[in-house]
Image: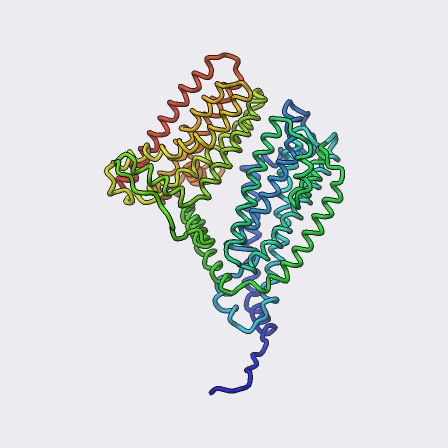
Length: 551
């Protein structure tokens, strides 16, 4: 029956939450026991498999290594490098807000409790506060990474007191930065206004990669000190870097003021995010609860590609295609046409590959500048190069995921591996070969360009090996027992990283030998062995493709 007076819905917040607390009392004890068990397992795994890393951290804090030949270059690169790491912390928190966010509820809560007359502030704000506290704690632990990197490079002064001060400052700054990012993420989650959150995270990620490349260039070439000053005062990411830079021996005289500004900004954004947490749309909470269910199932099954599919569905990266290239008339252009089409329909892959290529060239320049201590910089350069190649192999990945996708083409399935190598190789030749040629001409070491050219097919070959790996098979979980546990974990890990291991590992040795040896014939030997390695990787990828087709 219709009435002219408003219907007053009673506020049942206290009764509902009290009932839930009483019902969950027994379950809460089980959850505490479960968390304690997993903490024990995590500590055991860290002790067994990463005990050397923990010991290295304590050794670096207690006994600082002596300065090495790369110490001055690393000190010059520290402002830009630490700013890039700070931006990486921010972008990881903001990116998380696009699909999961600091305000998240379980599936039963999203399906039932959100529709009841319960105040949103009592339901959602405690979740945000826990997320902010956990984010700050995780950020503080992550702050050990830049501290150990600086101490391992021989920076940070003498004595364990100086080392501990540097580590404490880095942990405090990173924790405050993570809390600031969590507050900004809550604002992003509460005000979903189309493409703005996605554009912001992409812009910050792009800036992080660009500044990382600038750090590599700064280490190789002395740039004006004004650039470092501008970076350190450009925003919260620079404020977070000033304390570690100053205590490592760099120039940041006002770092206490910068740390205070960072703390004030973090507190302000956390308070603002706490108020905004009560206004997160119910539809977004339900969608993210379902996404977390799909993501958890994919993670438990160790299915990386289903994880990617769930993530893309949550953040809405699948969009309608508005343009395309004209279909070629020549048969041999069909596969390159499809690969180019796949790239232009996902322009972010092309942008990321370009930025990663620039970062790889920057780290390569650092390796050339100090050949005797180039293993770490070469490993970073090849890793960036592999990631760039993997981003350009989107067409091969699609054919590896669905072998029937190319069934109508006039090619045998196993030969698609070599056709898919054309576009990534040409793209890397432009993205990386151009800067490498300019660097080789500027430094007068033209033979180095040959090393970059032969590294491209090797990295593309490693990316193709991973593109045609297929789905994770159940028999991989049936390992054998060892004194350190079952072997299935190592087997699955090797299955995932076969391509990068086979491509990056040998190339580190070959390139290090080439740039550190004074003999002219070393580069020729490296070129020949790299061509052989690229052919072997192509054969492995072809064998994997043949096995996929037969199954």
